[in-house]
Amino acid sequence: MHHHGYAWVGEKKTFDRESVRRPPGRAPAATSEQEVHERYREAVAVFPTAELPPIQTANWLVKPPSMIRGAWEEPKEAGEWLGLQLAEFAPRFASEQDREVTRLVLLVKSAVERLTWGGDVSLGHYLQGTVFHSVALVTCSPNRSAPDLACPSQ
Image (cartoon, rainbow, N blue to C red; front, top):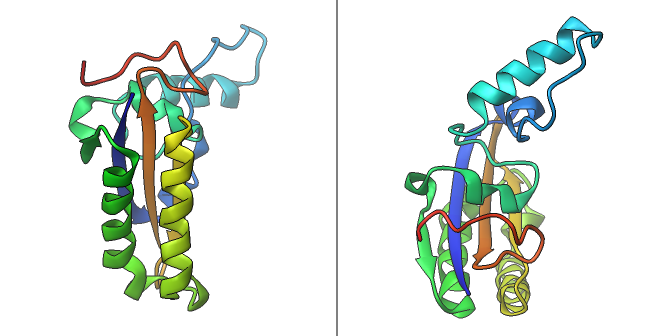
């Protein structure tokens, strides 16, 4: 078991485009509304390569390996990377409460515990203005919530 790190920063309105944050799934029926067909086509075309965080954290594993920001064998090492990500962006967090050092330390500690038993971690923070920061740690080989997904770097 090992862990992959992913990070994304961008406009919140881009993050809100859920149709490109979900894998396509089943094709809509011929009788489905035009809007449903358009969302499906967009998901097919965009989801596999979009750098946007997927709705389900485990779906990072179907993205290209170039999106992996780091890989670690030990949960503690992955937690250290997470801590660095949070420390880098914390001064820009829109919420003063989210910037509190104790809170950030507890988030990292909780993430390490979750990774230890094979869980995934996904955190998001609004930054000042209309920007959103997303960071995720995904357990690989196998992933607990999606064991059929292959590891992108093996």
